[in-house]
Length: 481
Image (cartoon, rainbow, N blue to C red; front, side):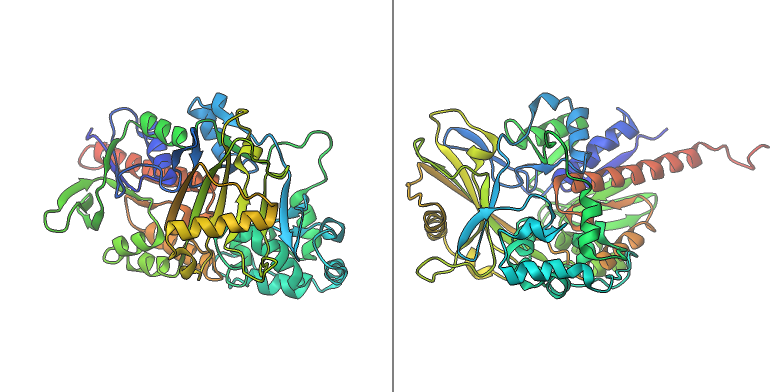
């Protein structure tokens, strides 16, 4: 039988997961190639050296509620490298005060008004308590049904304070977006189809309060996410081609043709099947000619840019006894200046670090529509972040080392059109033999969700190639002659 050839376009976590799963499905003989336009694999998973330690300057952890990442870590034989936070005590800075982040909320939505009493004003708490008395929220769970704005619905039912002080900071950390522009069903699918109050729906999602030791919420990899990236690449046994943009994708008889490399002298590759695991803007361009409906749907998914400022402070620096601090909408310094950062993670506190080593932390900067913030040069951005840190914690130490990592267009926005756009694009792609898509633009921006899309794409391609192989192996003439 012919050797199956599959090209995975995109070497981020979704593409790597797809290649790894394809190897398991297709066997040792399959030719699997990963083409990545950057000079390294990993996409938004990137580990760098800072202050003598390996630190993640992109995604630093994954949620364990979705077990997909944890299962993959075990499958790769990396369970002994899986680590969890040594401290679980996040805070939020709202109304000029830094207080503990309520524990029993779903992306900021509480199961009762008691959970948010320390964050909201008395009027804000009363508004939350009144939500149960409102008519049930009717939200059609069908993917192509119209979605509604998170900010608008939550403000109407719980009050604007809850949006600005909890929901926006949490969603801003996940999507680098604005609550008023994000879709409720897109970002909180567990609440879709709700026919009761949102308060009761949140209670059902969270389940009963845990008894005894709380299970860890987050997981990470000792040595950084590069360990996961490298092991996926190794075990996929894929041919890795870096620094090569894919410029065009064309359907040909029995397969696909890819135009790869520089425009003046492109290379032409052929494959039986292709997995596109690239950001929405790149997918839109590649699908424009062959799958225009999918391309048009991808164009409806906007993206946001952000930056991570990683700092190593002197070893004797004392940070608050917390994992970090979120900054609510509209918060300002005592002198009236707005904050630049939207959140700080006290990395050393959260994950633990050797005594006597530089104190590690990172700041997240940038939301959708804040291009001006990210146009500042590195020195200016670091100075602004240090000023924020001093205002929030009183810590004014000079870093022994710093890194600024910019993620241009790195975060897809799950707006009110998102679920309909994804339904349209996947429907169009599914009609094309030997083509599948994956990535953070589909069903979630986190590591587990991205891995899941890679696995789904691999399963679709594996089923297609198996079916095609069976057709080729049938003898000529009528079956049974």
